[in-house]
Length: 158
Length: 410
Figure 1 (cartoon, chains in turn yellow, red):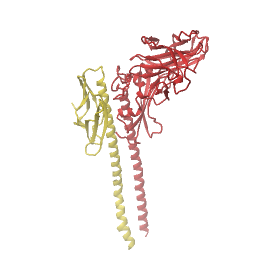
Figure 2: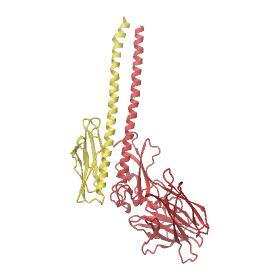
Figure 3: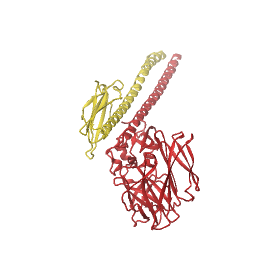
Figure 4: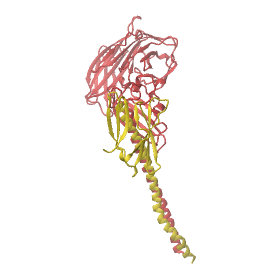
């Protein structure tokens, strides 16, 4: 009689619990993977976005371009693991320098993932400070040069 | 009892299977995360290399000044695309070469010498160092990098016969291939040492053209005017084919005990001091003198050397004497033109030589290495671009690594 109790009262529930352990363990590991992947991809996107802005600025800043507008199509993903992300351009300029430093911040919607990268620009750079752009409606970066000043902003679907 | 044992065995096997599954799955996931990190590092490398190479920096002419740039970029401000500034590259604090102290100024200089006969000494205090570059690029505490610019074409010159006639051979090779059937324009700078104390050493230039064979070699380049095996000379060769240009040089002097070393003092004033080698690292006695004659030449479109006037400076010829109390002559170089400073020197009626200093690294195809050391880093991503510096073909390579290990932090 005690043997039956051990078999059916203890062992069977434990066995049944094991059945659930597999998917739970798989789910936890996959979530970890997705979180890591999202973080890395967000960082990669921020870095690439920063470099694209910097290269566009320097192209427009060349002495051979007096005025005009230049558009660069973004090759960054509109969604990361199904989430859009907010892009915010902030002024991080140090008071001791004459140059302007842009802080490009990306925050993934619906998560706590957030990353930023610094972009060094010249003193004639200008942008909309603290305006939030959504990644799923942002397809390009536009630089407009007039009167020596270069204005940078994001463009959407046309 | 048997059933209980069965259940316990099953449970143990089951738990073992779960642990094995978690272990293997975690390992696979970890590998994937590391792969993603490496992919992100590769993207960053490409972005960073383009950022460095496709902008002239802030201010755009920082390479021709002594100021610390506010933004790092190496593009020639007068051109577009992958055309680098020969002067901005001079201002990078080289990772290679030894520091040299010039006794007369008490200052330290980066020595970019490539063997005897050609050197470039830049003032350490005015150079852009690695840590500043990291800050300017916005990657301080996140990434480390090393930027190398190496001539695409290596032109080497060998002396087959020392005199009567001087016989030279040239070999031009690219990155793993011979520079076959390339045209080579060369010039021999032959030094003349006067016997009179009142005269200064001078030189004559002989130009010529030849072609490399299928192995990238050009043999039997002879100069009958060189009859003395101790005759001092410099030989510069330009190998070019379909717009790809490489430079090589070779120098022979009759004395290496005493010689003149040009030292760049200021990029903004373009002043170059002529130092006696005894005054470098306090390596010799005071009071030793050398007569010298300095000229500046530029490479023309047909790859011949043409002398460029340096004005009426009284210091173009004279005497340089070792010792802190003896003033060093200063040569003013042109502001915007790359070229070669040729200094012939004379110790006695039979002892003398010639030294070259490139004004702009590309004039003598000096390589540049700037940044940290990638050796020992966990993972290093590299990317390359083909660029031109002053018309000379170079390969720019950026090695980038994360300073926080595998995980890449933006």
